[in-house]
Length: 311
Ligand SMILES: [Zn+2]
Image (tube, rainbow, N blue to C red; front, side):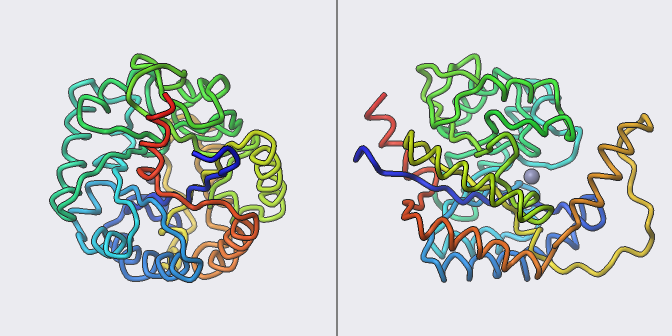
């Protein structure tokens, strides 16, 4: 690897989550298939960028075409677990269930594309320390569930384990088998999701384009100084124009009122900002910026062997 080669990963999580309706919906999967995916794929073609798509096994089963269309256009197909239900988060399921979900999602995707799937990202970035073992045992070599030094975890689910983000490395690293948040000598490569205190993700791009531009410049500066990668996370369901909500009541997922107010209601109001078509020019802005800085746009699987030889 050349010394000054700087990598940029555009990573997309594909699922049936309706941001507008604040729940998982099969109909949303159809919008993802017919609007979100084509919009993103055309944009990536326009910029001549290859990216990584992380799918839940559930949406892949429901609409296999949603997987094929990205594969045929040269993007990496990766796993986003089997189910995005809160009870199937990878920091709450039993060890046995974790392995079942990993195997099932891997198998589902491999059946559809007839090719190997080696990269994983946990739904809602929720993982336990020892998930490296389960990932390796089920044939995964790359993870991208750690958002190193991102501080907004208090607004999301699974805070307990996400506190580990404070101590995890910012650059790409091989993990410890027993601790995904630490450098070690296992065969699992971690490609952290970028953050400069605040996350470099599509949600934030839509909520506050101005603050995101500060995050983006900080990351670029850091990359310039240290050679670290940039990993931008977005979702095709952010680029769909779903019919408006029929009632203003936000689905309540939390039991106590305060966490309902913060975690559900406030979060929901913010998350629907610039949803759908208005998100397209915002993403173009990111891609314009990153392209102008001459990053090497990589799929996750493209860098594995580069790092392996340096290990
Ligand atoms: Zn997700």
